[in-house]
Image 1: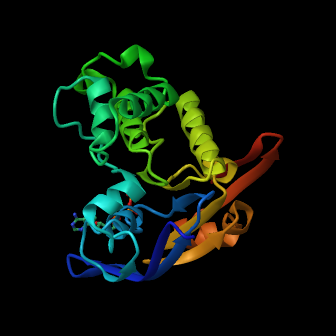
Image 2: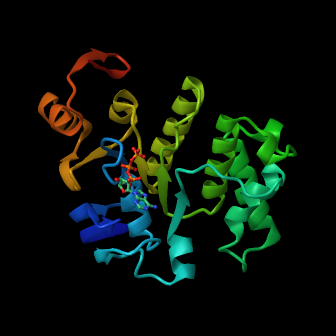
Image 3: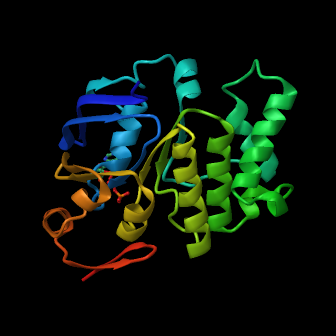
Length: 245
Ligand SMILES: Nc1ncnc2c1ncn2[C@@H]1O[C@H](COP(=O)(O)OP(=O)(O)OP(=O)(O)O)[C@@H](O)[C@H]1O
């Protein structure tokens, strides 16, 4: 069963077409990396998929009630805003709001697991707004994980994370996909995307330029068309290293 199905999705923003007839279907077990130049519409696609902005076409997520949608999908927006000076633990606990019927023990287990998965134990009691940018980003990922949804839409989850935290986060997402979850994450680092994602979707000009296994999508021709760049690719025992030129 597809967790996310977009059919002919079109979005116009400020009288400019941003997405034009995008169709996409994402299955459990997939970690899909959403690639594309700045302004290609990666955030727009996630916002429209969730029904947060007007669109034409169909999104199975947007069609759900707010409660069912919150049970199906967690969302990490690109903006890392934390509105109140609450503790990291309480911030992560906000991910449990869609589950008012859960027992205290279930909530506690979900919060503890999310904090542990993001390596946030030392920050648990700290005021979230007084953490570094990367630490705040990890706390917001933990909030999304605590929601315990089958689908996670994450807008540039590794932006601002140090190299070790980027690896840890992407390894975790890959492991979650292995457990049957489904992750759709925008990402600008082509090497990391190639290494960790099971599938890549390249957006350009408001359309899906390529969709498939990393090796099929990250071709010289596709990257030149999407970004206007050449790349030097070196295959290492740890996966491809992709150097934009
Ligand atoms: N709130 C908004 N109101 C009007 N136009 C917007 C808004 N947000 C984004 N846009 C426009 O929509 C287009 C797509 O933006 P979007 O944020 O989806 O791109 P993106 O692929 O996520 O880019 P980036 O890699 O820079 O994050 C851009 O031209 C942008 O200027």
